[in-house]
Image (cartoon, rainbow, N blue to C red):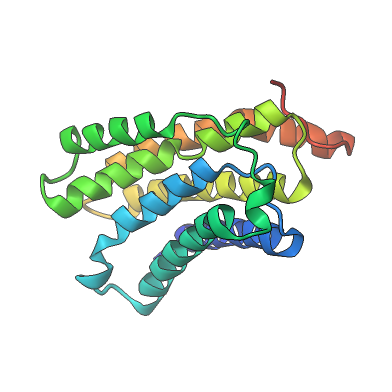
Length: 215
């Protein structure tokens, strides 16, 4: 494992910790898309099916468990926690994510590295992760104002994908048989979706004003 992948994993972990901090410290999920969190839970559950069949390393196993457990915990809190769920705004979180899931599944059936049960769902999870942030970005645009913790959560989530792109470039030049092109292309698409958010986050930081996304 190279330093860029490790940095990407840690950045991803930080984004999740920021979100958990927001939920547990404020007992609120205002500004957070439940649909995005459900999509991420589905991403991890389908990608890490090999958790019970293949052992790579202790680090790999622990990270998979952490991502699955944390994503499910967030979804549970937003749906079931008596205080947290009151702050969830269904009227803003209206992105039709079921169509995204269906489209990604069909794409996983058509474009995969090997037509097996595990590889099809791996490809599906990669495609789904690329667009899982869309409900969150749409919600933020509709709400206008973005609180600090939510903004930092999305920022670190985008940075994680950026670091993974560097990881793939590094692996392309250092590995003899690099085959993860599905992940590379999907990662580029996912990072591009953050471009608008990054721009307004930079303007907010530069002018020391509250982050606002245009509707």
